[in-house]
Length: 206
Image 1 (cartoon, rainbow, N blue to C red):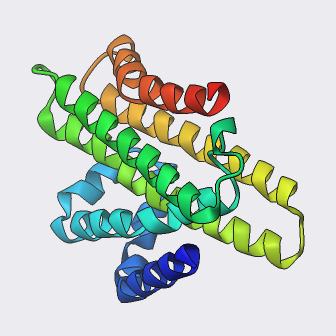
Image 2: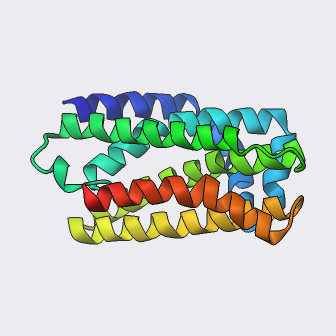
């Protein structure tokens, strides 16, 4: 019941933002191809605001997909009903976001241009939208052709890993416009590899 209610709410939210999604979609795709497009997107107040709203709107659909296809499923969640799983995954997701935000604030450099650092940080919003849309499309298409749960789950895990790897490459390229490759790598370790590593380890250990 909780899953269906949240799915309906997220559908209504997405419908209200559909026009903005269509208008910003080419820019989102361009950000996957070239890191410079992330800077171009940030310079447009309208596009960046629309992107931020869409990223917020994708939170519920992402949590629902992660719940339905067990994208985050440590052993302590075995036996939980779907409603409790949604709450746990939402809690983990919020904790992950807060950790990233805290690290982003603590690691803010003094020598790097603030615009570059901000653009690199907000690139996560862009790729989160792309990831959620890709997962929704994959889940929908593979379920329609009756691919089977293990196949859908594995496809989504590999897809998530591929998009996240591309995101880190683009984020590193953004950093490289204002710092050395060694410094850019250190920022990636602190801002991306560390929090995401904790998330992955928690899914394996617990």
